[in-house]
Image 1 (cartoon, rainbow, N blue to C red):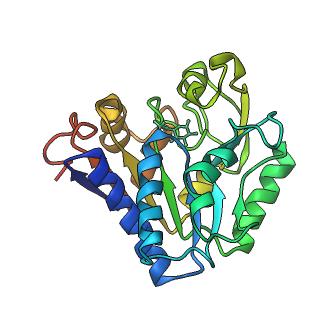
Image 2: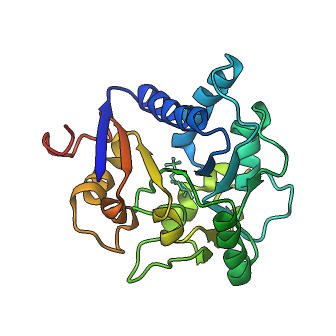
Length: 245
Ligand code: GLP
């Protein structure tokens, strides 16, 4: 079942998602989280940091698995998603060193990543953003999707959307990455997707109310038994009133 919640502003939508995450962690302090990067998420991580600073949430016993990571960047490169997470979230909370994992290592590495998630008891909650082309993590639209964590070639649109992370822009964006597979994501007990801004309105409508298709990876969330979608008003702008209720 997919529940859609529309809030007036991007800030309110992000705070809503942060509260949802904080509640999951409060209910179960050793929660296993799937976490995304992306500009949309900066506000969510900000809100979680504020809650942490107020003493409303603790991450000491939490384990995290990020959805994706670039391939081919040196370990301390500032464009890495690990660097993004350190900068916007991990560096400001009490997550244990070593509790945050990122996929790496091609085919074998993908198998190890899924095995590590299974050993941790599976993802309790997977937080998701959405690419303007409908990708989840780096599961790009196409004739098929991979179930397991795997190596992907990034589409030009996705490389452009990630250029902001690199000092020299697009030429510096890797052409390959690792991504959780679509089954890795859909196996999470709960998923919460956040989309904000008018530039996501078209893909949000296709993903939430269009046909379920590998051409729009996020449309597969329609089959998830426990999915929450949080939108701001601009991102919900192309949904029918009935869908956005
Ligand atoms: C990247 C990430 C995705 C994320 C997407 C949206 O491509 N790999 O996991 O959902 O960006 O990012 P933004 O929030 O910047 O629109």
